[in-house]
Amino acid sequence: MSNSKLLLPLFLSLIIFGCDETKTSENAEVAAPSVSTASIGDGNLKIAYVNTDSLFEKYDLLNDLENQFIEEKLVMENKFRVEVERFEKDYRDAEAGAPGLTEEQLQILGMKLQQRKQELMAKEQSMEAQLATSEADKYDKFYDELQAFLGEYAKAEGFHMIYGYNGFGNVLYMDAQFDITNTVVDSLNRAYNKTLEVETAGE
Image 1 (cartoon, rainbow, N blue to C red):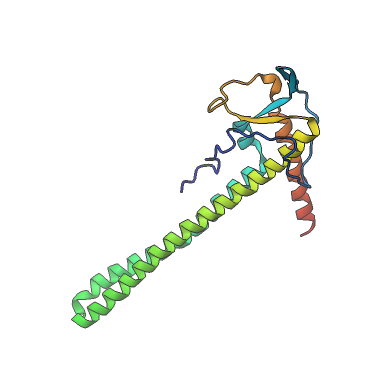
Image 2 (cartoon, rainbow, N blue to C red):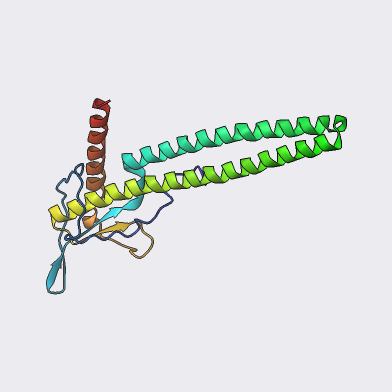
């Protein structure tokens, strides 16, 4: 698991929301954008897009979740490193004292060291599993907040589709007149910062 930004996910490279399938959020704020309505065929299809690269970079919630994960990872890795270093020292001490031990004492010591090694391996696996779960939970929180906001936003503004766009993937070009990235990021950050203010006031 790398220390790179939590943003490995490009699961938002294409987000499509129907206005009838929205998820509500008490913290979502909808700001009126200046976006055009696209006409297709005999009907009107109102669409917009969000630049996912900008969203990942500027959304305060995601940046905070990244920092929380990195700090959590460092704390766990440092604690584990201390245990490994302690084991390595004990192993070296055992090697140095081995000539003065009986065969039975050597067998007992060897079994104890082997048991500790297995325990360390199990702890490492457990740590990796905890970090993977924590990372997934943070992504779920980010995705849920974003999906809830965009669902309400689409419904309020009459959008039929909101695409996630970064210049790659299925959508290779989008006209800039449909770009609502700044509006979405600003609204998300206002809602998130209000939530932080409420949480801080309640402490």
